[in-house]
Image (cartoon, rainbow, N blue to C red; front, side, top):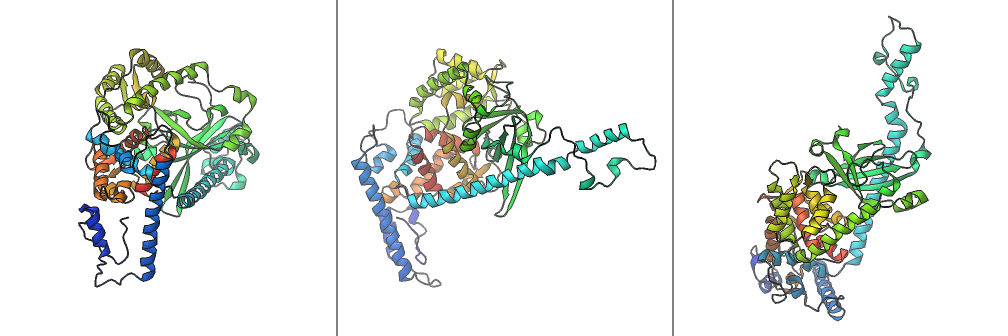
Length: 518
């Protein structure tokens, strides 16, 4: 382990030196004159930690050797990371091999106690956040929203003009001072706390390549008493200051695209992975970056399953998916399965390159491309989709017969995407890096935050930290349109491609947790 001990100086060139050389430098115990030496207590702790980490990795490697996963040939950690020179199939480039090095983090022993403590803390923080938003929703719809409703003035004035003779000495109602007890509550329907308690709470994210929008923390509520829904945004400034404001106002909404276009949202439409679509023009309060697109698409990432099950009725359960929707899923699934084999080891390079290529084809900057453009892109990246498969998929995606389709939607439908559990960790890493919430992260910041100390090749001495870090940065930079920064869309594409070759969710999460410290 290449660990830093308080009071022990290492050579500034140690990162570029061989592993054995760095080890000798550490053992020399060079102590600067202006710093006290480490006490025997800390030296002992360091040695114990170092021994435990090496022993843990050794035991984990032995267990893997004795009990290999089904369908996986027995390999050493080094060979499993780079797949071995002999095992690499023809057609892989140097970038593909360097990208596959990231899979080595899946071999790190699972530190159950540490992960459980971190997970418990995250769950508590998430529950506190949801509780804050739920309380704000109740406040808004039971008191504050009614009192501050601009319609109160117009309604009151209309009623007075009908029943009260105007008095020239009396000022108009809008100029008079009004207090809470003089306010006449005039709402379309009377809400009670009991009515609002029959709701399903869910977490959502905006499907967008704009990092600032994609990382917004959204919490929504679907109310069964009137089939309405509302979505709030939770924002945190520093450690103690938070802000909770409506993002989508409470109302009854309908699907805006797909097979259910025009149908009102019902309880059966809410599940993890479901998309909620809204017309941007119907919500003037949305940020300008979102209003640039005709449709606002929200993906449900988590849901209160207990509340959902308790509120479901027999009629809702029967209305699951139509035969058309089931057939659409089968068509797209067949294409995804066929392409998955072609992307298995080349996923990072192809997905990141395809994203850049489609963006370049979009000369008008609308995010929409024609059928010929998509066929050209698939051909350019040697992704074989037969005409018999492509045409039904195009009919599904081009439901409004406009002749053009959003290329982000096309890529998600044809190639597929990682599940929401995996994507939540990708967003968590990006939000940690993008602390200014600009939607882009400078390469220099990524270099500082990326830590390769626990990579198996570094532990075994086959590679240095700097070599692993450079291999990551080189493959990531290849995905970027700018050489000095990475956008959220490009960062997501990178891990989307890496995800294709990893079957187990926890292995993928380990690939993110270990180098990024989340």
